[in-house]
Image 1 (cartoon, rainbow, N blue to C red):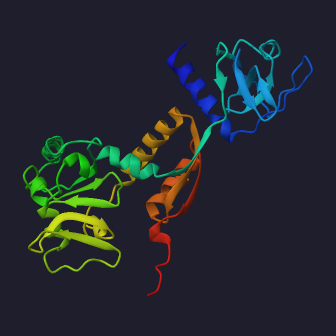
Image 2 (image 1 turned 30 degrees about the horizontal axis):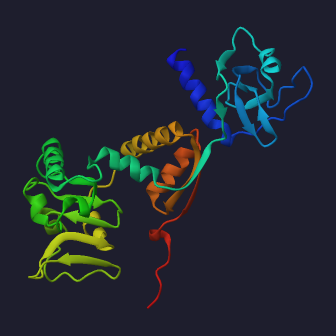
Image 3 (image 1 turned 30 degrees about the vertical axis):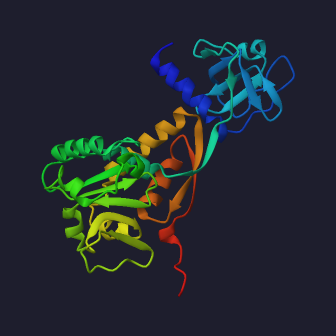
Amino acid sequence: MSSKLEEFARRTLLFLAVVAWAPLVASAELELEGGGEPKLLVENARIHTPDGIAEAMAVNADGVIIALGTTTEVDRLRSGHTRLLDLKGRDVLPGFADLHVHPVFAGLQAQRCVIPQGSTLEALQQIVKACAAKAGAGKWITGGQWDASAIGRAPDRSMLDAVAPLNPALIGDTSEHSAWANSRALEIAGIGRDTPNPRSGIIERDASGQPTGVLREDAVALVRKHVPPPTDAEIRAALASSLEIMLSFGITSFTEAAAGSARTQRSRTRASSSNARVCASPGPQAMPRPRR
């Protein structure tokens, strides 16, 4: 099978969650539903439908299922322009829905300094050092995700200073509710001994009261607001990458769990025109603050 055919077949099967199931017609001559000629025939399969298991289906050029039936019935729809996919008894399921995902954020993280979860301090430092060398002096180093238990000691800004002294660095942890900044990043943000904790955040400090570089919750924003925002091209690439990964696992619809920013609204618009269905829920930045 050609790579183009394999890609067409994969996307068509993953698209099942966002298309209407055509009714199974009991007659020997299947009635085509949804319009168009069959572009792909999937045969010798176990196709799970609301009405039970079908053996074969026909799909038009728009990815819409236009007929369900037995392999013998559906095979009669074959023409010289129809592609055939013999699944040899394998299952076809409706696409999965992920109810909590951050596709733009995840895609952007993949473009940044990627630290495999579970990395030791030495491994993390080598990765950050390589990212700083690639970025060039003065450029921000962002990404993640560090794991405090794997580092084996309390993170400190000096550990990042040792490998990225000329770059501001802000690295998120595995929860993305904490981040680790080096001295240059803290300096740019104006964070020092006398900087108060934000209302819903903590600036970790050492015994002398100096910031260690570890920031919790809203304290992360004190530094993050100084990081240059991603370009539209970076956002498009991030979303495309995340959608490809989700589609490869059969996820055809998802909920963006932190809507509210202009970035998220742009991503929602782009995702809605792709092979995925998307809805969005408000993120913390879109929710009203409680009064005290």
